[in-house]
Image 1 (cartoon, rainbow, N blue to C red):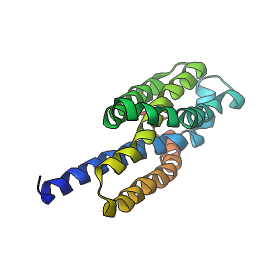
Image 2: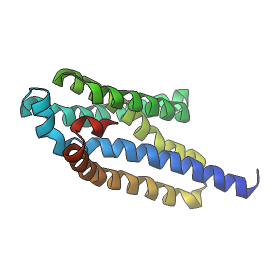
Image 3: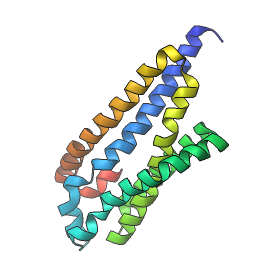
Length: 170
């Protein structure tokens, strides 16, 4: 393979990883400013709705190392893509959840997808990029995580205010 097509392949892989990381990161914070609207719409209370964000963070933290190992066994790209699919379907389910309990459950499933994405993205970078480009690739994924967390808060507030909280999941 010539270096031109190798560079295109690396850039495409990096773009997909950055998008996946950004999605998972945005969703870690997007619900924060929607808590009052979610609480009211689902006839719940803040001590229950707080689990919408807590369950996401707990599941990602608990399963990241296990999903990294599963990626080692079954293929990192396959697990990353599975995470992308799980995350997308669970996001839709969160958006249509009729009760607080179902929303929390779907957020847990969404977090499984997020954990599959985040735990395999670094390994894919290590497998794909030559040593002299790994730092740059890690820098982009790190930047996307931080930008995503900030964007989640901003988008969550704007979307909830002008369209409705359910749309933060779509």
